[in-house]
Length: 255
Image (cartoon, rainbow, N blue to C red):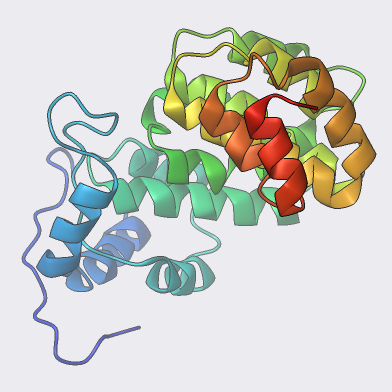
């Protein structure tokens, strides 16, 4: 079990209700023992949990991703039902750990297991409610389950009223980008071109930039059609790797 020297463990009460199965109880015991109150305060600020912010009301134990990765190794065989119980937790790191376990199990499961995890993910999107949770899981669990010629699911998610489902839609296309298939990303980017939320602007710009890393021509063809109406943040993210002179032309609208 990972321990950081010099840190006092925080006393954290598990979610109320019936006693969890022994393996889940053991996992939570390790998780809560790693809690760091100073990190929790920092994470609450970083993930915008104040009233009116996108992560309003979210609660943090104060754990970093490397510690969670170690727990994934230790508990990689945790049962699906127990993973879903963690995903419904009020603690952010429990939800992130549950998603990391799903990604691990999805990547190593047979077709039936992958389909089961895919369905469970879609049925529990209300708990995938911050950008790190989406970004750590959407491509692996949603994108990898789809065919690039049939992205009806992603189109539906892109039209959702829920911010995080819209982010799932665009980040899921990262799977296709890695296969040098850019059509799904460009199609979902068009659907989200006029989205009102900054976190969607950033995600779309990020995915367009990833397209450009592999095929600058494909990215620029999209940008030339849309850059003058794109939200400024989306454009800045998309052209981050372009030469400075080209970036200035895009931002000045002179291309």
